[in-house]
Length: 491
Image (cartoon, rainbow, N blue to C red; front, side, top):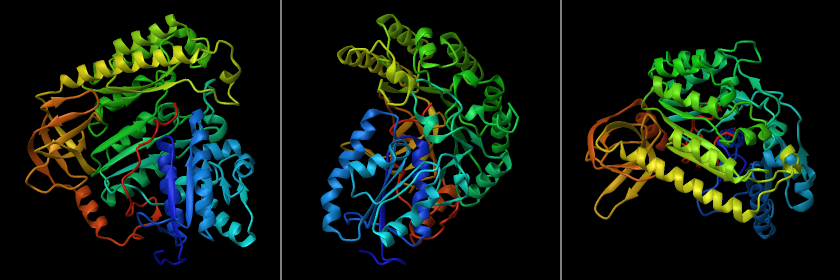
């Protein structure tokens, strides 16, 4: 093993949404602040941390399968420790150590800051430590953070959720919504920009409910405008809003603030009013479509993405056709599509009208086919256009004769572009001409210009810096490319 302050290495495995990805940045920051170092590729870590998701049934199966594979590995590596945190840990608690007694630490969503101490205690006492707090005591943004990117960052504006959707277990695991004060958020954004970050994504379970806790219904739109005034910040995104609370002041702030990107992820879940009522989603089909109409009127080029569940209890073919109708009218640029997964502890888990698996599978396939068809049609309209991309980390697609890099446009569409002769770095900006469209990406064979940025400088400096540099309160440090979330923030 590579020697460190403690001589111990770690690996964090992340499952689930952007909230979990961001929490894992804090877990790695905490571990490095305590003297651990990331395990070199190909080497077994002394500490393996699972940051889990509980939204779907296969999350349980995946965790216990992975824990089973690690049992003999741990037996062969004396001193190795396994920790399980996140939403599934909050839900299952002692069940984890019952089913996998070789697990050393179980911690919940409200006490990720306890991980280093729990690992120490488990080693000293030679027994499993389970600590699950029922509510948040310290907002996690105060914890050390090892961010995965030098040029883009998540910024939490709230944690928890006040909604009571019948299919969702998240509110019982993340707790009631707690909002950060605008000044704290802006201070973090400004600190990130000072470190070279040029894109931030404001993160919350329901971002447009932000401000309810301190009595300002327009706090989120004000926050968007305030972020637009941060010098050096080029792109602002957010996820996820709830259609029931999506207000026109947010649309106006998006349209009138140049750095707020023309991109909106707004979960639909179902296009059937009857199913939406059973889901306890406090909006209906026409309200959802009305929001999209107003967004597109204000920002014609906006790309809108969504979440859709197929096979909710009691869903009929007529209900499903209503969902397809919304997809046709909304013309989403992409969608996270899910087959309904029963989660114990949610009201939907005890509802009558379970849809047969073969019917769910058929509807799911029809939905995906329609989503892909529309996304491809929308992408084809981008051929011939010029777009400015923020260069992403890692290589893009490789054609037979062309080396490609990848980047994201303002609307967050993925574009694979021909690598220019002039070197470009992650975080730099390139202007390209789109030459080809596929359902899930665009291709650009012509690079029109390259703009070197502070973010590119930060990435270049970071790749040459010691691996422990920069761990601090929200400060970016050397890391690896962020894992793609399994799903957007659970709304």
